[in-house]
Image (cartoon, rainbow, N blue to C red; front, side, top):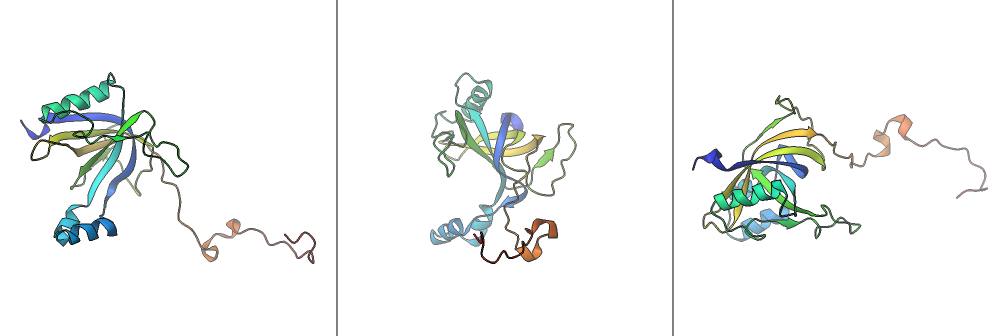
Length: 195
C-alpha cells in the first residue's frame, strides 16, 4: 500500500488549530516525558502541527462511514477506543455546555508543516493561527500504530473554507491602550453619587 492510498478528506469545523506554528509540549508534558526516561529530542518530537476535527456520531453519516472504512483498510479493528474518538458531548466548556454536541472529535497531526490553501487552491497566508470554529477540509492519512491496535491520523493538508479569527484575549495595560479606549474622566462631584 502506498503512503497516499489511505488519505481521506474530512469537511469539518476545526478547533485547537496549529497550522502556522507547531504546538509545543507544555511544561507538564515535557516533565512527564523527561521523568519517564525520555530525552529533549522526545520533547521536541511531541511538538506538532495539527487540528481537531468534528465527525458526526451518526453511523450512517457518509464522513463517519468513510472514516471507519479507512481505519479498517489500515488494519485496525474499528471501535471507539481504537479509532481514538473523543466524545464531543462529554468534553465541556467552563459553563458546562458540550464543545461538539452529537460529534466525535479526532486529532490529526503532523511533525512537518502542511500545505494550507484557500478554496481556489492557492496558498493561504496566515499572519496568525485560525480561530476555533474555522471551517476546513482536512486531508488525513489514516494509518495504524505498530501493533495495529490504534488508528493514527496524519494531517496531509488543509483547505480553509471559512476563517474564524482568534479572539483577542490578551490584556492590554492602560498605559499602552489607545486614547479612545481609556474611559473619560468625570469631574469630582464631591461625594455625591461617588459609587
